[in-house]
Image (cartoon, rainbow, N blue to C red; front, side, top):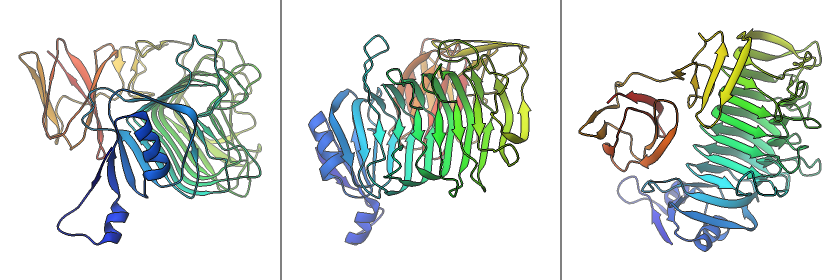
Length: 411
């Protein structure tokens, strides 16, 4: 395992080095376990290379503020089989990784959570999951459901993630089972949730603790089933704001009516919820807002909706609807949020069966899809220019700390 100390310029004081943290490179499962549980110091970044890392023989408790992310030199997404726990007043960031427990949907699901944050009443500045693929957890992604150990989380963020096959073993757990956590800000954006049997979000039961909840540019397909929780279930916390914006929510887990329902923190008289440019598709029941009084209720009317998860396509009637939901999907033949081929900063072209992209931010993640939305490959840049072999026209999602940009290249 290699450890690098990052310097801005010249000689830094030891206190500054500690504040910036180090880059810790690992290459084996044992090194990864040691790095995240014992060897890391606050603000370290642990680089995980491509490959599969099975560290799920026990719950790995993280007690320092760290970032775990794909090594920028990786050409494929690192896969980590793991169960994690928050073990202190720390922040945790996960970036560019695949996490799973059960291998696939044909295996017998086991009753496990991904991140357990109910160990004690910790104060957690931030939990961030970005550019990740999470799947195969029998219960929840985040668990904070112990009334005797209530964590306080300032910022909870899910960004550009695919989360599927959650709660298959126990549908009484939401994908985010955080109902006893005191969360100030929850932002869920540019993400897809698919086959989450127990629903999606159950949070902030402490009516003295308001939350600013934003779900934006998401596709929520096949969540919630009989006997499970609502899609979103939040209580009436005065001062809270619940916003669902530019999203598609459709189809219960098993395709049976009246399992999809939203409770956006209202008691029937308090206006806390906002729906803005949202499609509520198949399987919603007549009491879909569960006594919620909406300040904004801008639903996009559709008379039918069908989807294909493998190709990330959705078709609606009328078929003029587009540019709603997770940017990775194609809605009625139009890829959501595709920008023009060139931008003021990043530009590219295809020449001699090579895709050339210029002016990239350092350590960019480049995710390639065909024009039908099918995944092709993921590359990481170490400089401002990258060249990738291509056979056909493609769509590229460029993810960096500075921006998230989507480009189409025609051959």
